[in-house]
Amino acid sequence: MLLDASESQLVLVDYQERLLPAIHEGPQVLANAVRLARIAQLLDVKVWGTEQNPSSLGPNDAQLRALCRRTLPKMHFSAVEEGLGEWLRPPAQPARGNARSLPRHLQKVRQEEQEAAPATIVIAGCEAHVCLLQTALDLVEDEFDVWVVTDACGSRTERNRDAAFDRLAGAGAELVTTEMVAFEWLRTAEDPHFREVLSLIK
Image (cartoon, rainbow, N blue to C red; front, side, top):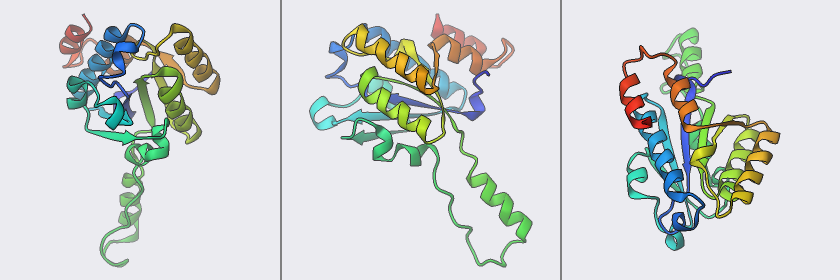
């Protein structure tokens, strides 16, 4: 199964200014996250951010934060505990007007449109074995299709990062890289954004 941009959303977890200097290969991890966010914007994929205890750890990297539609401040390690799921799959709104204002078949179409939020979540973040792991596992439990971008994830140690990847794969998450996501979202060199995406990757 390949990723489809029209069915995807991107979640970027806790790339915070005070945390990143301690992350193994932090500059490269952040660069890949920014690359993902830019590619997502080119291809109309929604980008969401989270920040763990921002009063202590500060905000996300400013460049990355600017690329996110919204950023969720949180104290729980899992962003799902703080309402991320509602951002990714908003609850259906009741139809406006009285029950007779629309024919029944049109009311059904409206309800289906409200429930059609993309259920494929491409996710990356820090620390991979804590906030990224717990958020991704909760998303899997909530029946999202979760794809973890390994080269945009980091922990203070390689061992912790790799243990997170092992556990995520065992739970059913797909492990991918930034370039895998980019080219699967594009699908073809004839995509009008191909050259822009290629320039971001190179």
